[in-house]
Length: 200
Image (cartoon, rainbow, N blue to C red; front, side, top):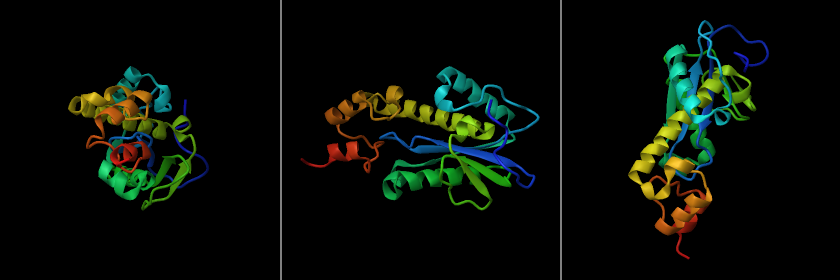
């Protein structure tokens, strides 16, 4: 079970956990979530969203939304990814998620080794989604939200199989790209997409 908070001493106040989903896929937005948990309503089973079964993630998504003090989910679009690059778009989505919290946190804990520009003190924690409950909760919200977006992409462009690979560069996805070209949801700045767009 992850610890409720991060590491070291800090001034008292609300602490938000932040994580993202969707840096590696070839299509769709990158999604970030920020969560401030309620210590009086602990949530069992939090952890790295990638290690939790999909149906369990869906249940935790609803429980986090019901029990957390506040949550915020934000995106950076495909256009923003292609304009800024994926790292800067991820930082933008994280900043939007923190900015969307109904209660402003005093401190922010972010999964990974980089911090978005924020107005309050923050700490980057490598593997934070497995160590810090609030980051774990954020990782689950971001992952479930992005998976749902991929289902929507699949309904709109079924030839690519977004419901299965979620936009990641699997063999099936790369084959669909070669056969059908890129759809509007594809990230044109990513090499496998760029390869099918550029004339040989």
